[in-house]
Length: 500
View 1 (tube, rainbow, N blue to C red):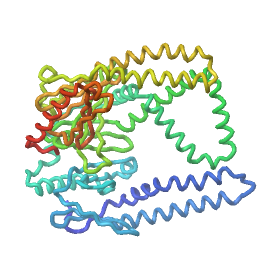
View 2 (view 1 turned 90 degrees about the vertical axis):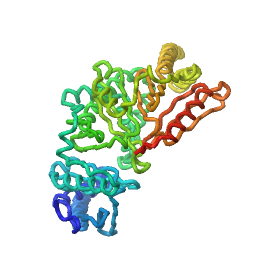
View 3 (view 1 turned 180 degrees about the horizontal axis):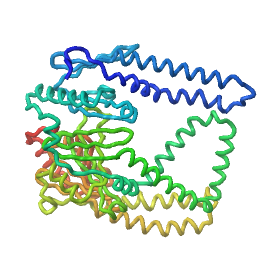
View 4 (view 1 turned 135 degrees about the vertical axis):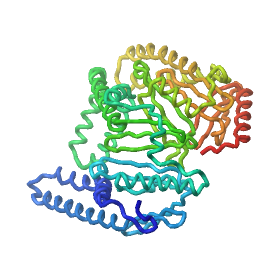
């Protein structure tokens, strides 16, 4: 370990890391330069392309020089009970991190860092704002030593026992999950393909609209042709759906492989450790006291092969990260139970808890917004604007209304809250079932909602706010709702345990 009382620099490969960081920021600039030139008539301006390439080459040279100076002006050191980071070329910045304000220290490695054989160290602090505080390029061994040093100093500053070394911690860890290539393929095939496809369409449309003006008249004519195809919707809809589904499956599988490649999860006495990623290798270490709640999810395809997904919601230091969670897909039933027992040992099961279910009015409201209103709007649009025969949307409506009623009914039945002595479990979803576990003392705020329609029927909804997000119990009896709201607030008030 180097003498941190003296300023220390990153690994020399940090020049490359910073260069590619700058390049990523400048990508849009290059696109704005190249597209107008590439779409012009070359005979009209024969030297324009050569000049453009010269400008781009000059920009790359300037970015390389900037990266070198960023590397030279970046250093870190320890002064007393603080860790200092100095950086900046045109504007100098000095970040001071008191050891007792450190929440966690993570190691990350994107594709460029993997190629250059370095890792990034990120420090999460109480009040770190919207920017990550860290060092982008360190050798693996030095990053591990620095991480252990910072965590030890954090413990000392808080008057806690100094943690064991990484080797001792890892030897005490219990492996829970490891995803191989076959598991990744199964998880990819069982992703929410509709959501993936819609997100891809939204991103494509955003980029298309951003650069459409540079393609001139051709884009306008193509757009008019695409709009014209809408009148032949009945003919092209099956083909469009097939292409949409195939592309969505491909994108889901690719995303899963990149994000969760070689995923491994361990449990230890202090919490949870997860390592995953291909292009961006990340390691998450989540102490037990920072975990606010966990949620298990599934879908019809994953239930067929016995898989679920785990999301761990942890307390963070800024609003930007308030809803950030660590996702672990491909968990089996025994792995689910092991993690639940590890973090919620006080959970005694449904038989030892009080059951709260939403009123039947919740089903009627749900069916109204997911079945009746969409059907009415769809029928009107189809008849008035899509030139469809009047009988076709009515047939679709006749099929969809009973299906939506069935799904709303089953969703209503799956909405259950189980409140125990120290832990509550909230179930929801029929097609996409999920269950969330929350320790009651983690609740930071409790809101009782009552709309005009709920008041007429004597109903309320409860929302439990934590440092990592919210959980909700909708449309329960007013008297029961206020009783449990007061009971939960009382338990939070008398609890002596720290919420993070």
